[in-house]
Length: 152
Image (cartoon, rainbow, N blue to C red; front, side, top):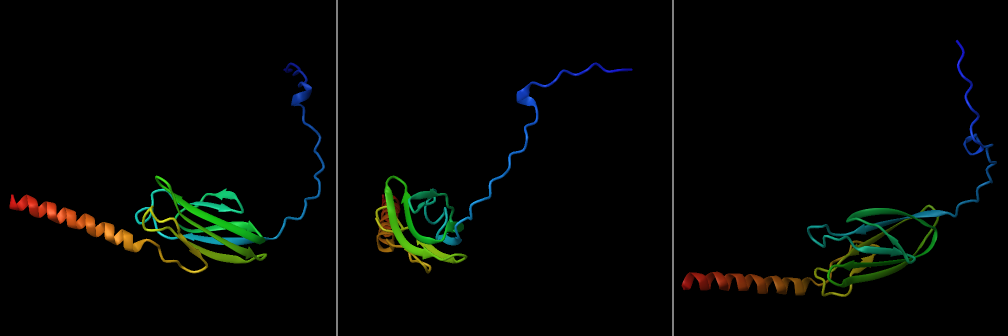
């Protein structure tokens, strides 16, 4: 039994000859930025901070973020966004080849503080006094409302 001859494939579907690869350029030396965003969704904001490295946006999460970067100078900009931009902080550092640089960012306790905290060690959150004062005012208001309801 013989099978019918299959037609030749059109030229665009025929296998192409392999291209010779060009030698790859040497990649610049790399380092690692260990960026820790302090806090969590429960203690900070539902939206993680916005991070820019040398002007380029980088997606981050709460906790430690290991970000490979090119060795050399690095400018880190971080801010939070809710109803407005708040918690701005910036840090300049130099990454050496094969070096891991720890950086910590802590957003403020409330969105009315313009500055966040950034550095090479664990940071304290700014705006604690205003936050505690606001919570006291709310608590006193609730207690007075409850007492007023009981007395009437």
